[in-house]
Amino acid sequence: MPINPYDDPERYDVRYDHIQKEAEFLKGVIKDGSIVIDLACGTGRTTLPLAQAGAFVTGIDISQAMLDRAIAKAKAAGIEASFIQQDAASFSLPFQADFIIMTGHSFQHLLMEGEQNSLLEAVFHHLKPGGSLYFDTRTPPHSGTETEIDEVNGTREVDTYDPQTGMLHSSLYDADERLIESLTIRYTEPEKLRPLLEKNGFTDVQLRQHWSTMPYTGTGTIVVYGKKTYRRG
Image (cartoon, rainbow, N blue to C red):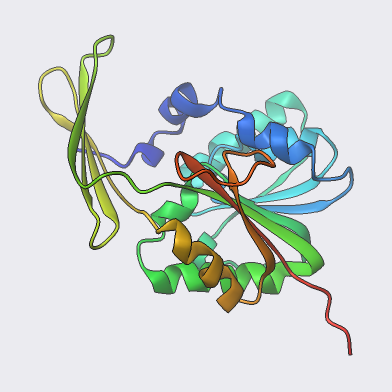
């Protein structure tokens, strides 16, 4: 029976835990002692390095299995961080944060525009005035179907993208052609990202290139930045 890749936290860590580009960038902008909310935190791939660097981080994820893995990793490393099981698209916490982040292209798991708006509304509510949002997403691919074969593991990944809906359906087959993973994500056109954030109250919205300060070039990972401006009255 095919599974969601997030149902196997240990396998997820083998595939992705070595990726630290997000954490390295964010450690450069998040000050020691800052309050941070890490949405769709998974096994703590970004949560733990930020907490270790001195931030007060709360990780939120819908998967308890992923959170259990994150908690175990934090305990083993002696890192203090909080983890709460909630849906990132409608999270609710009793405090506001200096930074809210969402890494690992998790924004693409919001398959409906209503879910995107719900998340951004919750983020805006939970940011302190002057607080910042960072999240990443990908440049939409060409339409059609692409196949990638892993010669080492003998797996075959088939991705089918529909530009009309922005949906990409990904299927992973093992060496015996059994379907072992199935996942659907959504791409948002880059030109729609700025209006989406501005509609939800964010200012100084910027599109940047793959966790850097460089402007988005039109390919690869898009890092979206938005700010909750101080209100004067």
